[in-house]
Image (cartoon, rainbow, N blue to C red; front, side, top):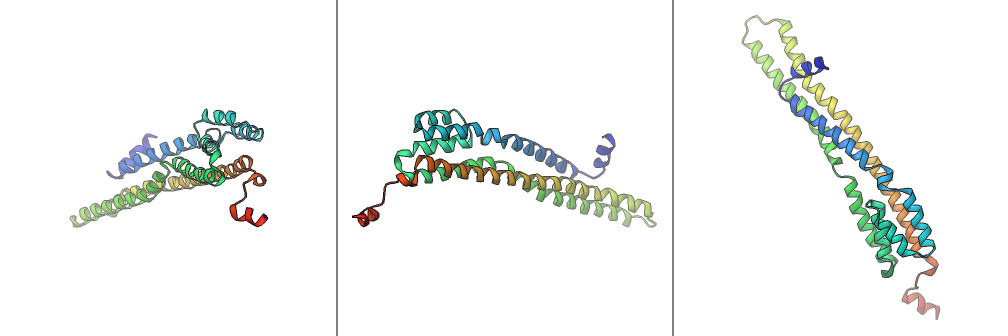
Length: 217
């Protein structure tokens, strides 16, 4: 490990922001992995119990149970049951609004990984270019430069590019993985929301529109 830090130390000052970016990326990934756990976002026991209570027309108990859970599923259930007297369309609209907010919260900090994946290779390239400038500047001042000195300066300058890519690639993979998890969670919430709507507002029990009612006369 000491050899690793010694090697990175030879890469120049831009190694420091690249290293800090790697720490931030790791922290964001771990925090989001914990936040996106299924038992935190979509507890299956809550989903099943609420559907059972709604089937029994026990809306108060279902609402009380949902209010005990501070998660996206609980928020979705609450807004559906609280909008029950306003009709299916109003409830669906409010559920879509709340769902969008909850999914946005799940995506919090994830964009940071994308930014790190984009910026760190550029920092690495910048470090390499500035390092190469220093190398050729020092070589130009010597009448008889040694190839070993030139090669040594070049490989040290290339260290920042390696470091930038070493951070950017995992950060991008982590970003895509979290995006996939969030998309899957959003789809699960949407499917459950539609299922809950069908239970709260059975199609057969919907009040016919004015035009439909007049057509039946």
